[in-house]
Every structure is written in structure tokens, then in C-alpha cells.
Length: 196
Image (cartoon, rainbow, N blue to C red; front, side):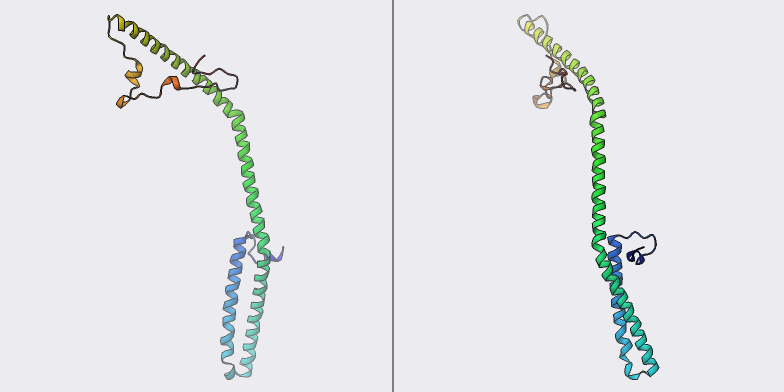
């Protein structure tokens, strides 16, 4: 056990905060003890010899206590930078370990989870590509029928799904399906939309 441990109760974590608190406590105790010396000497002129001897003994004991506390403050002050450095090093090590763990987790996400997600994306994007292809066929057929109907009015023109379901107030339309791009999930795969 080092001298530093003797300043604190057993099993107390010796931190920079604990050292600073002990320094503050010791300095306050020094100030209190120094304030006691003056009143002990104030009545020296009216003391008996025995009272004088006791007063000097009390003052000597107080000065020894002050000297011990001064030594404690000096020792704690000298030890403080090393404890602060150790705490900072521990914080850096903790942050580095957290970053290493985060990097490992990220590595696993990219190697395993992302592969599954890209496979799911390919499956779902392929289904969406089928939807877009069918909507494109419907739009092409609507345009073709309306073109023929314009010269042969046997029926009313067809109102397309864009107008029926995708027209916004003020005549604007939702983002057109033709502008959507669904790339392949994996390199070397075929795009899901537009399809070539």
C-alpha cells in the first residue's frame, strides 16, 4: 500500500475528483487550525505557568497537525497529475475499444446483414419492376386506343390511370414512374427498372 492509499478509506477509488476533494478538505482544516492559534495566545499575560505550558503544548500540537496537513496537501498535489493522466488514458482506451467494437459491428453488418437486405431488395425491386412494366403496358395500350378513337369515335376516350389516380390538385401529377430507377442490388445484376 502506497502513501496515497493511506489518505483514503479502504476500498475507496482514488480518482482525481477524490484527490481534489481531499486537498480542499485539508486546506479548510489548515485554515481552521491556524485560526485557533491566535485566541490561545491572546490571554497569555493573565495565564499561570501551568496554563501557559498547556497553551504552548496545545499550540505545538496544532502546529504539528498543520504540518501534517501541509505535507498531505503537497503529496496529493504531486500525485494529482499522474492520476489525471491515468484517467485520461483510461478514457481514451474506453473510447478506442468502443470504436473498435463499432467497427467490428459495422463490418458484420456489411458482410452479412447487407447481403440479406440486398437479396430482399432484389426480390422486391423485381416485383416493383413487374408492376412498372404492367403499368407501362396499360399506358401504351391506353395511348394506342385513344389514338384510334380520335379518328373513329365509336367510344369515349379512355382516361388513363395517371389522371384517375395520380393527379394532384392544381393539375400536377405525382412523380412519374418513368423517372424511377431501380438498380440491381448486386454488381453485375440487371436493373429492375427501367428494363432493357
